[in-house]
Amino acid sequence: MKVPMLDLTEQYQALKSDINQALEEVMSSARFILGDNVKRLEKSIAEYSHVKYGVGVGNGSDAIHISLVACGVEPGDEVICPAFTFFATAGAVARIGAVPVFVDIEEKTYNLDPSKIEAAITPKTKAIIPVHLYGQMADMDKIAEIANKHNLAIVEDAAQAIGSEYKGKKAGELGTTATYSFFPTKNLGAYGDGGMIVTNNAEIAETMSVIRVHGSKPKYFHHILGYNSRLDELQAAILNVKFPYLNDWSKQRIDRAETYTKLIKDQLGDLVVTPFVEEHNYHIFHQYTIRVPKRDELQAFLKDQGVATMIYYPKSLHLQPVFAELGYKEGDLPVTEKATEEVLSLPIFPELKLEQQEYVVSKIKEFYSTN
Ligand SMILES: *Cc1c(COP(=O)(O)O)cnc(C)c1O
Image 1 (cartoon, rainbow, N blue to C red):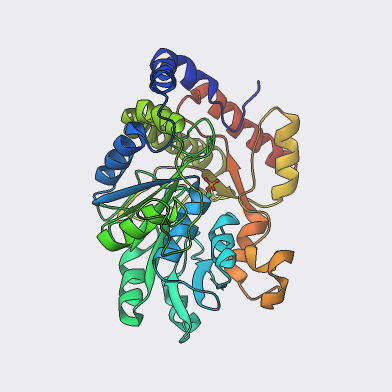
Image 2: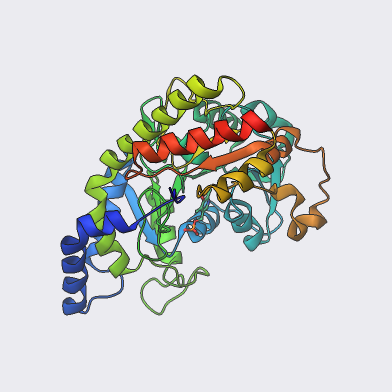
């Protein structure tokens, strides 16, 4: 049996006629940049996030970058973020000439540890970027309390967390802005790059929508420095077709996650650590990530057995060569560093079959019976 990490072909076959028609309409209209589809998606995603404004941008990385700029982050400022995340979180900070200040994560949720944030705040700190990793939101009440006390912006990196909830609240409700990615593998994926920022702040929404068109307002008059980063109209047309299915897809992911957890607990007991879901959280399982002993050997074994897995993330950002000049060393973020050695993400997507899940867990069991 072959179990891929993700298979998007079945989803396209199911939606093919609607998607093809939506693309056809854009091409016939010849409105390719910031047309009705982008506007419609901005409205849908803002409403979905329980906030007022949505700003469609080129990708999830630019969404973070544009948010930080609109929140007033400047060269030399400091921005607090986790090191256990995709590069873009910290890359967006460094691109401004600001300094990412890495704070350790919670062992169980893999999200920013609020109890470690205040020690990292200096007079230069301007913002915090909580990442809602794997589809579970960070502890936003505590983070918002710290941000309010120190007058910091919060840019929620919700690239992996569209649809997730914290105490009934969505990403963007408690932060200054929240950013989504429509990279094809994300829970709401385009057929290329795409991203969106949501916010309740009218002024910041306006600034962000100007930054994405070269800082041009009115057209050809530039008061601020922007660049070209817009959500593509064709991608927005595809996303408008897919968006109504998002909640069902999330439910199917949750169902797959519960199945894995049950199979693993039944067959492997405590040898494999299954994902921890905070009681007040709605975790939409962008990834199903376990912690295991002999992780790399297990991954190689599973690969031989036809089971794809991924390591998100094998190297912590504070130890990346590109950030060497920030002066971090091994041991600075022990919880993060341990996670990079133990995590393994299993295949999860709405179309994943029960037989495939049973096969994955049986192969994990087989590995530990001889290792
Ligand atoms: C995917 C991702 C991004 C970047 O999104 P792109 O659309 O690929 O630029 C940022 N942060 C996290 C946590 C991500 O998973």
